[in-house]
Length: 108
Image (cartoon, rainbow, N blue to C red; front, top):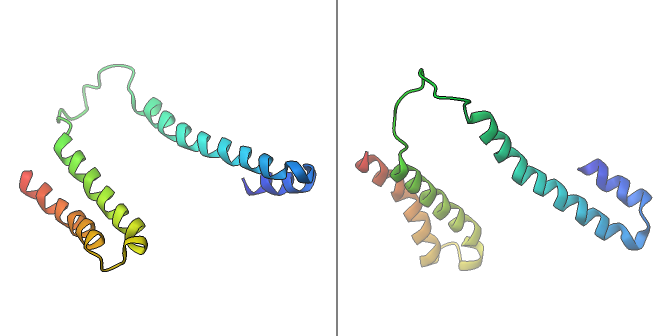
């Protein structure tokens, strides 16, 4: 990515550099955003039933609690400087993110 940006700065006309760099950035971000998950899905999906695989059900409640906890943690970290580090909203979502793993252990 860094190489393509530096090549664009060197060889693209000055009035087109910003658009050229932007389009390359979007292309790379789209490739990463779509490529990794699709590759993972293709690599994980077996061609048929795997008789050796453990027969455990998907823990949807655990996955939901994990997503909620991580989302609350990231929200608190991201919005903390805007809301105020000691504000009720910041402390509330950070407290929620710390509480979710406890709830997950109780549920299991």
